[in-house]
Length: 104
Image 1 (spheres, helix red, strand yellow):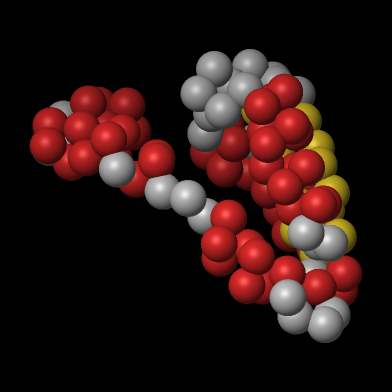
Image 2 (cartoon, rainbow, N blue to C red; image 1 turned 60 degrees about the horizontal axis):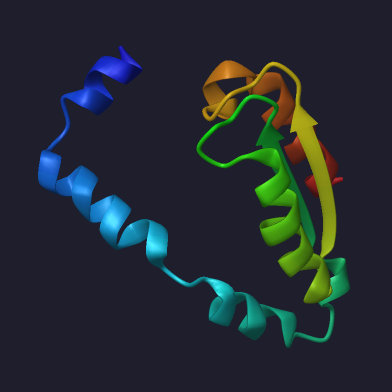
């Protein structure tokens, strides 16, 4: 159902996401947060799917995780075994564990 609904979505919306949404630079926002005095107290958990071809685990680690660490965030990184791109749907227990870790 999820794939069917995604494929049936508005073509302009899909093209807009690829052309604009995925190109948005989030680093200035991270820089503003990183200026806070207690940034090391901000726990972040990053999950990557073992078989994700959209956001590949090596790129997630080198780009996302390293950018967060460089800005002083307290970062945990996990590769979810057997997962592809939709970790919350494929492995909700991994998301639950990550949330428990961040909130504890």
